[in-house]
Length: 309
Image 1 (spheres, one colour):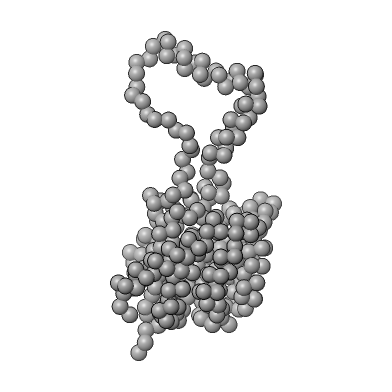
Image 2: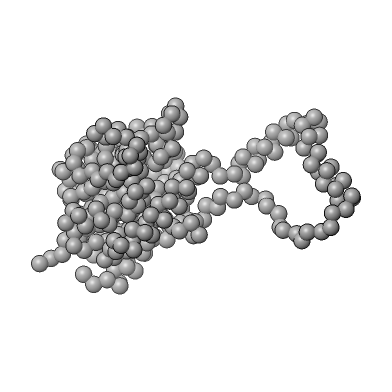
């Protein structure tokens, strides 16, 4: 009796385009997928694939996205429960798959979200596929929560970054999991402020040193009086060098998700774990799809070489 293969696609924002590379190789190797569970970007790619669109076709859609088009997804709203209301993301999903119910997709599918009020995991296997994906990708603090069946839902990565258990419960007895979350140590988007000087050995404090340091301390005050414009430009420079609010939110969530994932994988071991090396892609660089796809292909080919179905 043939094994039922389940695919668990993890969260990771723009790095998630690596999922397309994974699917491309699975298509090329004619490995059938019987169940798909996805979290966040994994839910988006998974739903599109489950609707009957091939990985190659998804790749063509993604390669048409440039910086201007992806920026348009983030339509600002009044910042009450999120900075972006997500309407254009919803329209983008509908333009690709229409507005089917999850139970009508070609492949059994589940999207994972988090109830922001209770913290519980919400597994969506029925109802609007578009709304389910919209809920699963709602990064807290950036996207407004999605109201779904009376609950306010946000990114599923907060509770289940790579939904191995979910796809197993759907009926899979052989699980391929894709993790695109880099460890905090491997991240390339450094949060440190530029311009930090080298450390120097401590020297005895003399009156001359005190006077020099006092002069340096008072210099900004003199600048305010003599030339407030210079002070303003200095502050703007510091702001530019600091991480943005988007970066801080995304990095904080990524660190949390990585710790949760580590705990989960110790108990819920998939048969195949694919981990594309996409840490060089920043979370909001959705225009770098080609690089992510290539890394997904490389990692999948390597994993399949070591796997016996």
